[in-house]
Amino acid sequence: MDALSWHTLAPTALTLAKAPILMAGLWREWDGLVALYATPPVLTWVRGFRLSMIGLALAGSGAGWLLGQTRRIVLSLAIGGEETLESSIMHFALTRGRDLRITLGR
Image (cartoon, rainbow, N blue to C red; front, side):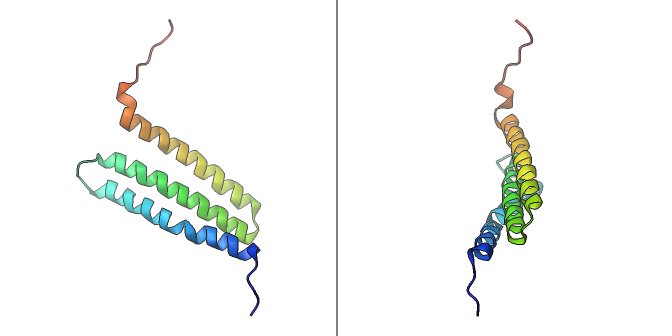
């Protein structure tokens, strides 16, 4: 049996280690869609979406590394980072958006 090299072991570990993060994010998204308890459901959904985007981005980059596809790594990290930024802005707007003062001009 051949020994596993770091070229195979590291990306496989990266891909598999992010599966629990992805599952936790999807679980929170589901809770946000069906639950009606103390936390507003849309806020729970946004938190789950952000967590699942992080998991998907890291799993996609691990798969790209494993398959030797630089384009997949770059696209996974770029799309994951952009979606994480958008969901973080949504989270900020839902939690602290009403306290902002917007002034036009001076």
